[in-house]
Amino acid sequence: MLKNSFIYGPFKSRLTQQSKAALGLSLALLTLSGCALAPGSYMGVPPSQDTSAQTGGEPQTTELVQGGITFRLHPVNGGLIAQLSSRPAAAGPISPRLPPSMPSTYLVRSGDTLRVIVWDRPELNNPGFSALNTSIVSVGGSESTSVPSATAGGNLDPVGRVVQPDGTIYFPYVGKVKVAGQTTDAIRTDLTSRLNKVVKNPQLDVTISSYRSQKVYVSGAVKAPGSLAVTDTPETVADAISGAGGYSDGADLGAATLNRGGQVFPLDLYAFFYNGDLSQNVLLKDGDVVNVPERRFKKVFVLGEVTKPVSQVMPVGPFSLSEAIADAGGLSQLSANASQVYVFRQGLNRTVEVFHLDAASPGMLVLADQFQLQPRDVVFVDAAHVTRFYRVISQMLPFASSLYFGSQVFK
Image (cartoon, rainbow, N blue to C red):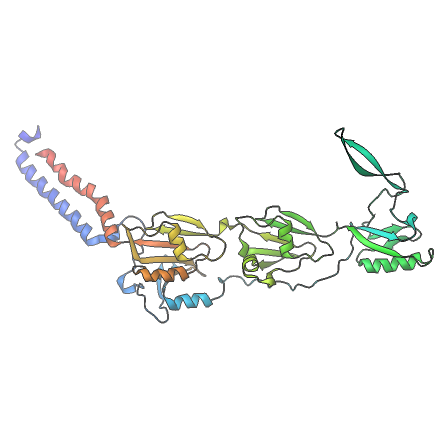
């Protein structure tokens, strides 16, 4: 309809010129702006501040301030690897050192059960029972089992004497005896002295038949968390974890803790189990809590131009940059800029440490295998310049094309 109008000629000329001008302007913008308009994340380090040079010697640091955050760029080379290897663990609050392991003798407390045997005086043994017989109980009509049966009398405790809340036990001919806070040897000496007034030269044996007064606790990523009784055999951290069924597959061994009296001590169980560091296998005391946290909070993030961006839970032990990239499927062969591989690590006081690896040379991947990641590190692989330019074209071309092809409806 419009094509036959007398106004079509001038309008067509004017529209065609405007369309071509708009299209030319759009292409000019694409050419001038280049990668700056590319969708997605990229480093965009200005050439004057580029730290991609992989030179020997001491690593050179460049600082950039963006949004009130200071980014400190470090080129990854042999000098930086040596510096990071000699640096102590990640900075943070100073943790107290593990308490010394001092073996101690078990002291009886309220709740423990003592077995006191007086030789040649059976009436003083097995408190609360005048006899301990055996009766046969039928099980399933064909099997039988022996169970103890006793006649009633006195205390009704066939095992021994329970230490009362006031720390005493009752013994015939002696009465109440204070035993809490003493060793079995001290209790035997005291009972012998007291009983000697009634029985000539008594021969006593005092043992603990049930440990119920003191406990340690194991929590976190173990197979059977709970409490364990402290016995006369010194209990170590390894004993406690073994008594809890061992650690689970998701345990973060390097971040275990020992809570003693409200004070928390770090425990590096990885160093103990895998490197034989016996200093981590401390002796436990009543009330100690050993906690093994889960490793799922210990992650690294691999983003950017990799085959499969991942949020990776760190395995047990060291975890290198090359392992993280390999777990993400490696660098994208079509879009990655191998010379722009970065590791972001949060620092103190609104600073971020940025480690830059130029992996364009395959030999530099050896450094990536020596660069150890820390929890919450972010690995970012930048896109190639041509990739970002292609993304700009892909995003802008439909708009630019509509300006040009839209004029065809007037022809």
